[in-house]
Length: 159
Image (cartoon, rainbow, N blue to C red; front, side, top):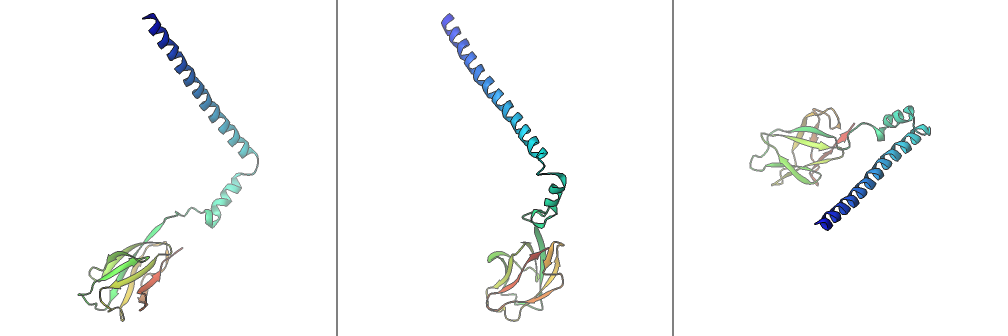
């Protein structure tokens, strides 16, 4: 029994030594990280005016990368109720017009198209009822006719 206790004590001591080694290694790593960060800041390459000018530039601006907006579209005039109109965003089905109106969530440079089960898109006109403030094109109250060959309506542009 004394031999088993001695072995457990020896094993416990080895585990304690390994834990102590990794704890010291972690503390030293964090300490070195702080030292190098402080040296980098004190180096003079980054100061408060440089940091502020990075955010003043458009490519480092505070705009969200994946910002989205909302467009509400309406069909002008009467449309054929037997042939539903579908909204495509970048060529993928998004939704359909209900009561001649639909809302679309869009991102910058999305291509909005309209598709129908029949070929009745020739004289179709649509109106942009409203947009969110971050959308520069299309503007609210704009009217569009479809490109007959592609069904493309417009490409969304953000500010």
